[in-house]
Length: 456
Image 1 (cartoon, one colour):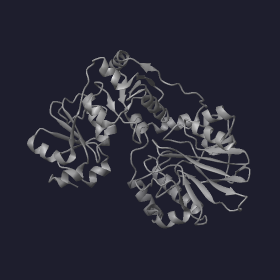
Image 2 (cartoon, one colour):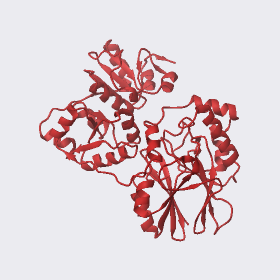
Image 3 (spheres, helix red, strand yellow):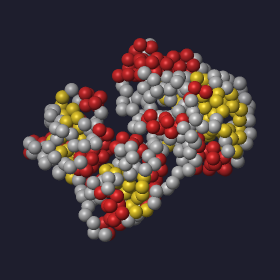
């Protein structure tokens, strides 16, 4: 048999290439399907089936592109209510791929149509050796319950699905989830480990230790921000199939400037240190070299706003455009040809942002009583400990200058590591703050070690 996990690192999504006897299926394909086509050629098999565990809310599925490329049949639960041509399945449905069988096991909660799949290799035995758990059970966590139904109802459904449908499987059954750590579809316990087993999760997954009431309470208490534009992404994944994706074209510095003045969002995808050294005035810093680029961009760009990309070179900008498309952002109007170098070569004005080490922030605040500290983490992080007198504004909510912020006084953007703070600093500058500082190398803990007061 053939079994391969294919990971979309930026979103923490996992898909699966499964087959035998010259026939293969792809489960939960990502938007850009080249990896599956390459695996099919390498393995000498034909992709004849595409299987969805559910209508995804955090990324655009590649089922349309894969079906167009291979002629494969798309299979999805009858409860999914999709508008495209497909073969619906119900509980107990089996897909035969040579000696390999995928068997549908409904596991609602994350979404009503959510389905897990037992993987059986009849050449070796009749019992399942693995289960593709989608967004029901992760390594170290379970799926979030608030993307399709009332959150408490969803949490109870997930509890019952996991305990009554999955944990009764033999302990050696391998667990292959639909997401890894970093995804917005799970909680803080989700591990970056790619797989586990039923027995190990039963014993060591902290989310599964509680009875139903405790599970529901903890699941709701730990909910983070919902995936940006998730309702639009679900609608796209349910709607008519799309098989094409248009590459954005190159722009000269002058074109980039003209479009930016007209309201386009210029996004610099280089590292935050490169951005801080020099960037196009008004640009936003979202590095594509770390996971989460697509989600961050989806939070910040307006629904119909044009997006323009600036990278170190053309290739980096085009890779970022692919990551944007994966979260349903089609309005990438182009990229700066030649990257930031071409902007500088023409002698155009560039802006810079001051960087300050987190350990030095306390001394800076003492020497400058006008310094404003903007904490751009989530509310749950703020509650665990924050700098006295700081202003809480999660970075993805910075669509304008906060009302309590003085644009003429210096403002320091702070998170826990410096990554979110880099994006926040660029947004504060874009929205009119005159002197912005990007706090790097730590956050509240570094401030506290330097003797700064912390409130909890």
